Each structure stands twice: as C-alpha cells, then as structure tokens.
Amino acid sequence: MNKVRITAVRQTVYPDLMAQYENPIEHACDVQVGASWVSDGWNCPEGLCMSAWESMSAFVRALGAGGGNFYDGWMKNPRSAMISCNDGFRPVSFLLEVIE
Image 1 (tube, rainbow, N blue to C red):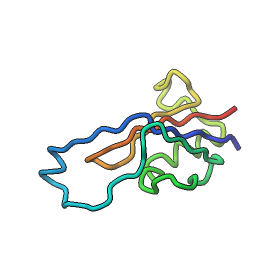
Image 2: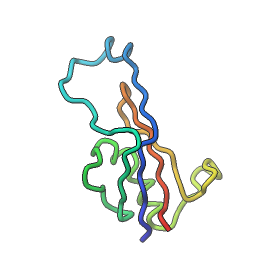
Image 3: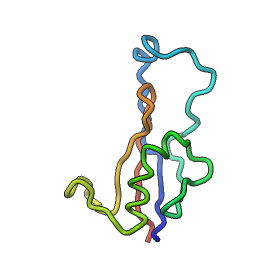
C-alpha cells in the first residue's frame, strides 16, 4: 500500500453565496492553505476534516492501491489528483500525491 500526501493548496470563499444561503455559523473549516497530511493509503489522517475526507477518500484509496491516471490523463502526474472538498461556500482544493 502506497502512502498518499494530502496538501491543501487553495481555498476559495464565496461571501455572496454565504449571505444568500448559509445560516450563520460559529465555526467554519479549520483547514489552512499549505497544511499537509499523510494517509496510509486507506485511512483518514488524524486532523483532516471528515467532510473533506469523504470527498477524496476514493481517490486516496485508489492511489494507495497503485491506481492513478484518472480520467485518461487528467493530471500531469498520473499518480496524483486535485480534489476539492464539498463545502460550496468555502471549498478547499487538495493535491493528492503518492509518496515514493
């Protein structure tokens, strides 16, 4: 099983959508751009947002098992993927990479 590094590379915030649709919340996402975690290729690393994990776990597990080249050449590095969490108001983009 390959280890997979998960790195938060960008967060986008949509204040107009938040104002129009989101109920006020006291605690939003804790993920910081530049933060990194390592998965054993199967399990969610400690400290990673569970909602984000649910968005990426199938890709992490495929990479961990030796898979890749998703969607016939989507990524320049076939042993990687760029996945966003499912928060429509402040999505974070994560780079998933197999660790050699």
